[in-house]
Image 1 (cartoon, one colour):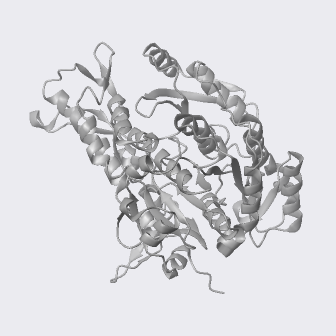
Image 2: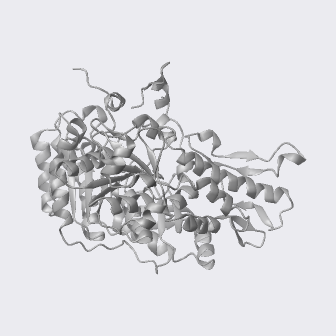
Image 3: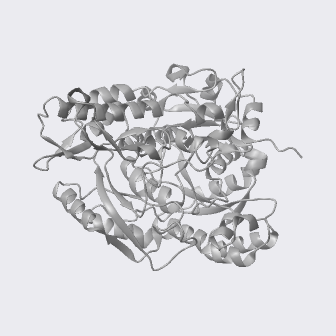
Length: 557
């Protein structure tokens, strides 16, 4: 049996013209600017002129990821299609993929099988140019910063205290640490520097949390790029860079409209990593989906300890969103890995490993229900090798926490395979929720980090490095103590050690560095060995990607 790849399934589809998708979403043509036949930008004036929020917000999150895969984006898309199939008006709000992992590990990030957004190749590659605009704005600020120092340094910026990095949308470990400004008197002022991947840039966070051009400029102007010789912060506003940066971002800020394989409207916009940033698509995209659909389905990156936590504690707090229900995605295969099974053993029934791995799922479920006060459902992406006995373990254990389990077959069947999940989500949306945050903003920075570690991760607390202690004291002195916290942590464990699978206990999380993203409006705490510039694996996905003489791309997942 010849099973089609994701890209082959996507290329075989017959997408609707984008104006037809807009009509289905009830967006007037005057707000649509097409980028080709199958994608478009939505004018920002739409939000100002259309009706108020009407939709119920559904978040799709997942267990702690493993090499076995979970299928969060695939589930999100299949759920949207499933809701449409049962007669509900659903609109998706998804993240844009980063080129780094597309050519590195993943090879694609638009769903899978018969639950995909299209045009798959465009979305995974350059799409409408949003990430290029974000990178350009980031690097303009870097150029203006170094030029200011070169041209006399009127602001008294200490080159040893520069915090702003350049960025590029590619996994490139070679750029983590560089020396620039060499080449003589006209080559700039030499200093140690480094690059972040574009999705880790504060510009991405600002972009995703901004609500308008005006709000974008306000946020950009607050970005701290470094400190003076007397330790005063220097901002993008001080460098008079915010206006030009906003000019580069003005088109990118408009959300992108595409469709699923089944024609469900999908807004794909913004995409920071949840392990090193806040991991959610743009506020504008989610806001647009809430205005258009009775049900707005969105996702957050990696496991619920990262993406969901930041979605609730940062994005929902900033934008005033209140979710109605949460979907937690799991696979039997991944849970067996959390229980100690090897990747090559996952096709064999292993109740012992599954039972050992179940605490990972159950901790995520308990967090959603008890910490955030939201109704939730567990959906299991079913594999042919999953046995009835294994599925019964998942169902029975979740039932003990008062949570239903729904089997999902969206990869194989698209929206049809998501109908059962859609019905359960509709039911949950009618339940009363008691939505709350994991911490209050009036706590100290250390208390907020500690609260997340104890309440969400299940750890004993935190260990703060001497350097981080100094940074925290400085940030609180500068008046940033009341901001929410964005923890940069490995995605592979509740702890800061990627080898601690399942639901580890009695661990502390080591905070090595703390900085402020003043434009985004949060504190960043870097833990463990987390890096803001990933590298490529030994065999990058790029080795399998090609294009023929007719421009047809192959090997993209």
